[in-house]
Image (cartoon, rainbow, N blue to C red):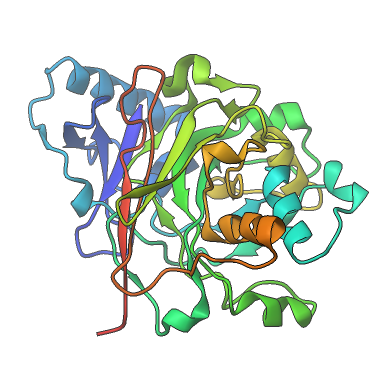
Length: 327
């Protein structure tokens, strides 16, 4: 099943079911008005939406309309919680090596994770507005899951069962602000502005055989100003799977339905696959030649992020954003 939230002037938008080919949609108002309503009562509402999804794909939905990603908010426009892991160790290793730091052995068994702002996300085609291009503007291409309720101390296996939906993510970072924040010893804040999400959220069954071991075994493409920055494999090199990331989050707290857990920047040890963020490209350049050559994003730059399924069709639709200055 594929779901989207369309702009209607409200903070939470209007829930819609989207066809598998992303060509058409149908409002879900008879079952639920918002995505959070579905997540709060998943077992009762989701079967109703599955019926509508089947009718939409079969051409039987009476009030279907053309699906337009430009009308989309983030699938979950605001969430009770947004946390992001760093599950791809090649990314961590390169960034740390470039600044002369070693990988602590604990990172092999204890996931890195930060808690970001979740009160307002960006839609897939919303402009990314930043006050200064000197802040080190960087995209980060990722995958995330949306959970149901997870009890404190949940096992990895029960955490996997809590996965309701998957999302495409652009976790914007302001690289020049982050070092000073980390030096305070209290984590990210201003260096992590509003995160953007792809047009549709999908249930795990939509991925078919690509959803294995609580990982997404598909390629993630990042195109920066019309040139491919990376076509990275999101599957085998994800050191911590989504079950482990959710269990890590739930170790000391209950996790409520509608929490979003990110994978971190998708990365591969094979450098020929490219990168999913500029910081990693700069790290590779520093390791190879002693200094970075690639500048961060400037006003007017564009980023396109997309993942295609085993059938070659777009899974989530694309994130297509432009970096702009405040008007």
